[in-house]
Image (cartoon, rainbow, N blue to C red; front, top):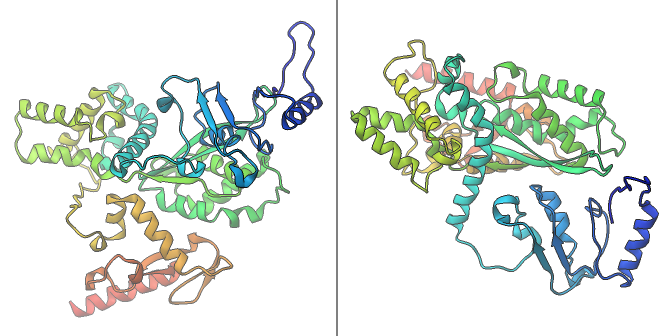
Length: 439
C-alpha cells in the first residue's frame, strides 16, 4: 500500500479503492503481509497485526507510536497476546526519538532512574545545542559584534526547558507527514509561554476553525497578533523569542487541541559557566591550572559541556574567556545579573520561586501547576485568593506567598496563592508600606 504512486512511463496510479480492497483482504486473513508506505499512520483499525517491520527512519515520536502501535493492541482490545517489532535501522537508539515505553505498556526491566535522568538531560542539552551552535559560532567570528549578547548573564542564554511536538504538514506524496518542532524557553519567556500555552483553549474561542486541522494564513496571522499583544508585548527585547515558534504552537493546537509537551532542563544549573569562571578567578589559577581544570570538566562524562557546546572545545573555551573578561572589568557598563550560586544543601522550600526555577525548572513547573489547580474550579475558572476575581486565562494572575519569605514564609503549596495582577500590585504596595513604617 502506498499513499500515491505513478508509473514513470505510463503515469498509471494505484487508486484509493485498490488500497481499501487490500486492507479488507488483510483483515480477512487472505493477505499475510501488508507493505505500507506513508499510509495507515492513524485512524485505521488492524487489530490482527502481530509483527511490525520498521524499514524507514523517523525522528517523530508521534509517527513512531503510530507505526509500532499497529501491533500493540493487546488481547483486551482485540489484538494478539504477543507482538514483535523488528527494526532495520543500525544504531536505532541514536537515530530514533523513541516513544516513552510506559505509553506502549511494554514489560521490561526498570532502568536506573539516575542513569535515565542523565540520558534525558543530555538529550535535551543536545536539542539545545542545535539551536545554540549558531550563537557560539557568531561569537567566534571577530567580524561580528556580539558585545550585547556577551554581556548577558550566561545562564540567561541557557533555556529552562523545551516544548517538543510534531505537526502534520503536506508532502509531495499528497499524504501529510509529521515534522518535529522544538521551542526553547528562556528566563525571559518562560512565564509568558506558560500562560500562553495554558490559555490556548480560550485563545481559540476567537477563531472558528469548524473542526479543521489546518489554520488559514489569515487565521494564523490574527492569532499571532492576539498572542503577541496579550503575552509577548515586549517581543523584540525578549531573548529567544520568535514569531515562528508561536505560530507552530498555534498550528499544533489547531490539530491536536492539546498543550505541547514541556521538557524541563532540570540540570540547567550545572551549565553555569559564570560559576566556573568565578571559581578559577577567585582562586588565582595559573594558566596551566586553568587549562587542566577546564579540560577535566570538558572530559567529565557526568557534565553537559560537550553536548551543550556541540563537542567543540573552542566554543567552550571562548565562552569561558568571556566570563573571565567580565570579572576583570572588560565590560565597564555591564548590567547583567551576577552569578547566583544556589547550594544544593539549601532546602528547596526556602528558595524563592525564581531561585527554584534556576535550580530545578521541572519542580518549579510542577509546583506552579499545583497552585493554579488549587484555585481553579471544574469549569476552568481561576479565582483570585483576595478579591474573588475570576478568569479562565492564566495571564490574568500571578503566584504569591501568603506569608512573605521575609517573615519566614516557605515556597510550598500551602503557602502559595493565586492573585489577580491588580490584587498582587496592591498586596505588594501594602507590604512595602508596612516594612517602611517598621524601619
